[in-house]
Image (cartoon, rainbow, N blue to C red):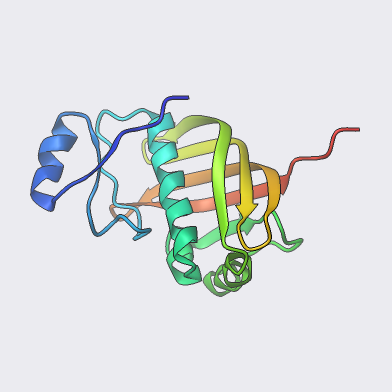
Length: 167
């Protein structure tokens, strides 16, 4: 899997780089601000990887509200380490408040992405979470569905489940 090159730039440079086909992350979008990625000429796989990196960076802040800001207001979350489903902002924020206590960090080990339409992307695969507080490692399967809403990519559905142990 090819990792996208993400360049931290100024607002003035964003249009120039986008017209040249680069993925640009503005300084205000680094550190897990809501997604404002310029994606002209970027493959669906590269866009998905950048959106995951932004989500993972939001986890690293330890701020459940920053993580939840990456989701649409009515997004569905079916998380790895909870039996419930969460489809409101307050439910997702509550879940992430607890989840972030373990200082998680995720790494995608395998994924595939598909453009579902002009403003939507599906990214599914395998990732591994390391809970840095406890050292626990959780291999999991995932699906993110992103939708471009009002100039921002938002997660509209996120399913994650532990990879079953081999028999």
